[in-house]
Each structure stands twice: as C-alpha cells, then as structure tokens.
Length: 194
Image (cartoon, rainbow, N blue to C red; front, side):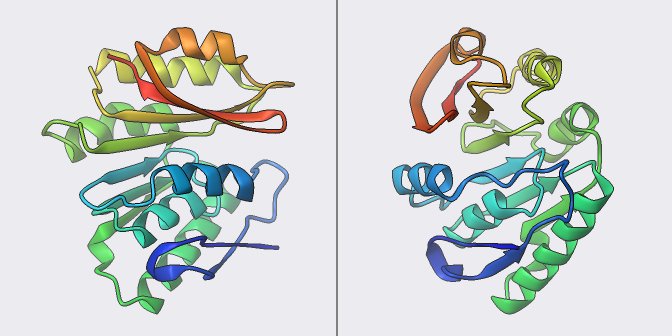
C-alpha cells in the first residue's frame, strides 16, 4: 500500500507505508483538509513525532517547509520512514540536511532533541502529534513535556472519538485552539499550549 503527496513540488509522489498494524497513516481527507487550510509552509519547521511513513512531514517539505524532523520509535515504521525520506530527497534533489529521521521514543525526542535542535524561538515550528489512539497517557505525557519546555509553537494533535482521548479533554490541554478539523471519527486540533 502507498500514500501520495497531495500538493507542492512533490504532488502525486508515492510513499510506502509500514507493513504493520501498529501504525495508521493519517487519512487522506484529514491531510487534505489540514494542508488546504495551511498550504504554504515556507519558513516553517515541521516535526512529526510518530511519523510512520513520513507522509505528514514530507507533505510539509513539499509545500516549502524549511526543515522537517521525522521520528518513529517502532522499528518497522522507522525503516520505512528512512527509506521514504531518502528516496524523496533524491527524487526532488533536496538538500539532505532539510530532513532528519530518528527512531527515538517520542518523550526522549522532546526532552533531548527539541531543546538542542530548536534553541531559538519556536513561533514558526509545527509539531504534529499522532500517537497510538489507545495510549491516552502518552498524549498527556508529550503535551506536559512540551509545556514544561515552554514550547510556544503550534501543535497539530490527531485523535479518534471512539478510542482516543476525547475532543473536550484535549481542548482543555491547550491555552488556545486555532482550528478543529474533523473527518468521521477522527479529528485534529490545531492550537498552542502557552
């Protein structure tokens, strides 16, 4: 199975998906709604902590993001992510330093890499969070860690009404919500913690 980049310089480019039930690609409709809303990402840094195939981060890169950080701690997902990113960068002759792939636990990435990689203000940084829906504690742990680090960038947080943390619970974790995108039982909250 593959997913395709929806817009930008790599529109239509196919990405492999991990051969595992442990990952779930963000639906095409959610991606389309998010990136139709935020089409131009020039000057932004995009971080995906549960990247799977890399479709969200590579979509951001296709639409002009300055740099993307793609992370997934699951081995099968990490290998697919690494392969997709290498092929993508080569196909579009992009500077390899604009995409960094890692296989760390998400909390460790936030604690170690976020302060190191983003030593300056994070106002043009977007973090995409799409943990396993059933792991409610992980959602809150990542949000709490970001709050502790005083992360002032934008967060795009995906969940599912049936098995994930509920919209009302996640909304309360934000100081402001800019947008809510919904598709079936899935939704993405866009907002800030501080």
